[in-house]
Length: 466
Ligand code: PMP
View 1 (tube, protein in one colour):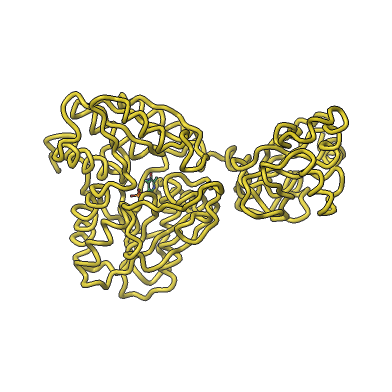
View 2 (tube, rainbow, N blue to C red):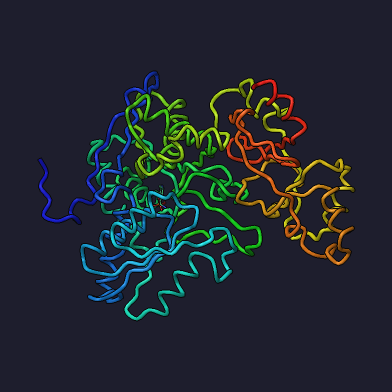
């Protein structure tokens, strides 16, 4: 039995576990490195300890000081626990969409948490990083961790994660797979493994679809903690300094659906409860393993546990309401009403005025009652969209009504004159929908608005159900 002399010593030295069930039929050996075994429950404990120790060494953090960071959760949890242990105050700025469990954890460790709207341009003062920086600048004795650009973040993995993998595989690792948030994990670990293997270990970045790391459009996604989003109004796509892109040999792009369903499979088939980005990395590792022969050993990082996501990915009601359903649309569900599961919807740039939006829809020949969604402008006029990027729904008829009742309103932003809509997943039973007059229902397929249904479509079905 390992004895640790302090909580901080219980960070690192996580086990490698061979995936026997998910790896069945695959030629290479696939090992998962269980980072949720760190004392704070995630891979970020390593970076948190390393950054705080470096700040102390550099004289940036001293007794009575305050640790500040903008983080989607796990880094904050790591910082909060290390700060608690060492007697620092911890203040964390987190995106409003962060899982409730993670916010509660932060508070449990005594951190002060400020929730911040998470989808504004990087230059906006309300951006997470700017809020945290402003707070740190205004607080005497405060030190801003800046995990995205802090060299002590990747360094943590170069001195611990990488050597552990090399030691525990007895130098047999041939492929290393990890998701990328700040890039600290992949860069530090890869730097060590490349060096130890004379450059032969292949490094695979498992990147959530839409993330710009793997070539996506920067759009919003569900999987938390990995990938790189980009607000369309941002003038530059700035990647973290912690991410050394030169070390990545290949990117595998993994959809939210594949990440979530892989995490669920790991729990049910392997008995391994893992989080969303673990699902992303595992999906990539399994896909990679299909290509490889027996001589190979794949190691995949499991950044955190599924316990953080019991109310989302592992909750059947959440899965149904967001449209992440494994099977074809069943009879009696909203999905069965959509002509085509990936049909898509009319999209308009969110800044348009009432008259400009009406003109554009008319130009496209969109029927008067067909809804369109005002969304962050990613240059698409049709397709699917993450609901977080949508500001309002309109129709040609609703826009015309605005202009008729108040001609001055025609020059106002159309987003101020949206029609109410509700969000349901494809798997939602039609009988479960409230059928209020004029109600527009936006249908989520794999978490993105991909179609709409209106009352006239629902009424006959709902009646026949009852
Ligand atoms: N997965 C989860 C759940 C995370 O919280 C993070 C950290 N943001 C990562 C993956 C990525 O780790 P890194 O920042 O080291 O790239």
